[in-house]
Image (tube, rainbow over all chains, first blue to last red; front, top):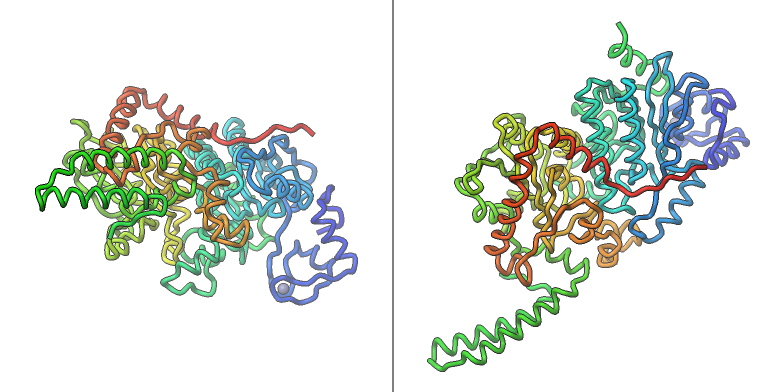
Length: 277
Length: 320
Ligand SMILES: [Zn+2]
């Protein structure tokens, strides 16, 4: 990962960079102190334990899109506060400041190793990547654009689930995004869903699970119920790898678990199967 | 044991008094009819008053009322010749979701619904109405069966949530719900969903994608239980009544958001006071909504179902 491999840095990234000015970072997996430059070069994957740290939407796009090919769409679609929900306006402001993004989802078009695609990427720094009306709208529009242009679509999710602060309207985004996915399905437009840490609840139980191919990053937390709810409900003791990418792979819910450094090439190979030949 | 909610207590007291007077009439042959009539008038006035001023939390408790009619109670009254069908043909049969063939006034329909239990044993068997992957997959199997033979689908929604346990996770609860959402949008026969109790987040939605969504007056529909919301917001589940307010989970709210097409009236004091009348009102609503849908061309039906969900949500367009 070269310096300046993405043009705009969000405040969250800048804070991270400031820490890295000290040239050292601590791995969230093994707690080892790492040389920041090695960590960045290794795509924020710990060179010692392989822990995959979260990427921002911009970093993820830089990882997957060919240089200078990403053209953002629907950037104007942002959240409102339809319920007048307590503290929501503040949380939206914090989300914007934290992520440097207007919304928890960035979508657009690009080429991936030369293949033109629609790409929609979530950002966890914006309210935990949660799906409210605006995120649902952006996913649906991205899918509709893919259908209209007959382009394959790749989504990268990182989300705690539906956004509580928009109540029932957030819940309905699950149906809305799956409605758009249904049209892709019928039209035979390839849809590849990449699950990154974490992909939970209302996002996993909607569009993220209905990709033609579902790819997950190693160690990513992937599950339906939040850990707290799941713990309370346990009659059966959860295995040590409960709700990880590897657990989901083992239980047949994920097609491939792919290390980050191979993600782009794997996507290329999958997309080429659908579009090439 | 009958459950009496706090705000129902004044009514329960009047009921007890009325009962006592009736007993005196029966046992001692003393005519108390005037006093009884007076108390019954008071009772009705009190009911109207209490039920006019229900808070969202009161409604949450009513939606979860242990005496509230469940799916099977509605099926018994509304339909004829219900044949329950079992199993998802992949793993097993889930007691939390029931379904089968039935007749609605001489018309064949497929009925599917979440089912809670009445007593402890049945509650466990039905997992408190929390469906597992095999429940959603059974529901989808029956919907496809209905589609194959051109029968409309009617669903009854009443669940706190989908089952959050290890087994459900292992068998793909998220995938099961997601697939239902995608398949229901595209189903070639009409779907009418009725929220009769708790519309608990994705677990409810997994059988509630429909051409018409109806909701009973004292049912709730929410993205998260108020207790969970309060725990996240204020780290205090006891503040659930405030969370219920903030979540806008009442039938009226759902109607305003366009999530629900009609609020179905309940008998005075809630469906649990008069399950038979409650079911008859639901039946009347189904008979009103289903025939126009059955007359629609399949392409038009699917198009308008798509648009219905495509247009849900409130966001803003801000040009930087
Ligand atoms: Zn490490």
